[in-house]
Image (cartoon, rainbow, N blue to C red):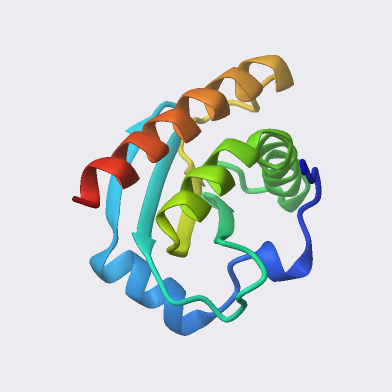
Length: 132
């Protein structure tokens, strides 16, 4: 069953997990995002993936712009996350992932939508490659 939600339990908020993720997680870049991920024991068993989103305050000094970019990123993720969920359920693990927006310009939704499909495909490949 496809679910196009992005509930509170799906958001990566645990400071402990986020610190571990930035310290020991694996990373790759697909412009305009840097993606940091790691297999993790999450705070919930209901969802296989928890995701976080970030935009640089240095590149976007106005909070309105940062919030808009994060909102657009979450929307693109929400609509395309099902393939990632299916891959994680097949492996039986859980995943913590963080998306950091690195561009200096505000994105367009269609371009961002395409980039998220590329990011999620690459993430699924990396997960399968990491697990023997």
